Image (cartoon, rainbow, N blue to C red; front, side, top):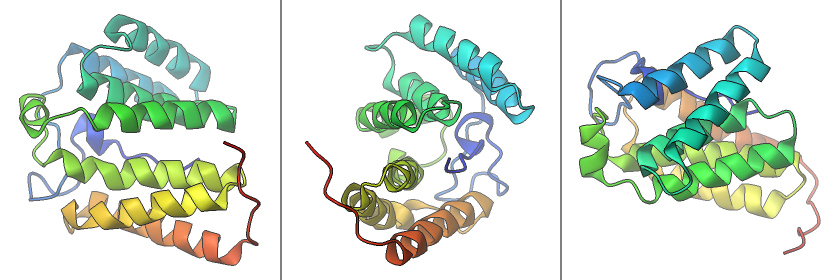
Length: 183
């Protein structure tokens, strides 16, 4: 699984509020619950994290606040044991992110434009498509992630995501061409 940054939820970007740094300053109750799920995952309790995040998803609902849906789905993908389920959640995160306005992000405490979220979302999709053997879709998400990487700051978070995109590019160039996926 692609490494996911805590910065989206906890504000731990390693560089405060620098431009392009993904920082959440004051999480609301839903974001706090997501942070609890992340903590469970980091302690190795993936099942409890999955349950807590599933409850948060039910609370928010599939038509709820896109910022909450993006955050839940982004982390729910990370606690899936099946790569196809991980893909479903990564796609939900991207779809929700596309609905988040910069104004809503600011209201949630995000100190950057929403565009700074996309490199990580595309990195995760590129990685899961690669692991599923769909090199074409993996490469598409790599290109999209790289296109938005200029929205990232030169901080710990930005460096981590850029390094992940570079690793994905290396893995894709080293892998034999995969057959086009159906559909």
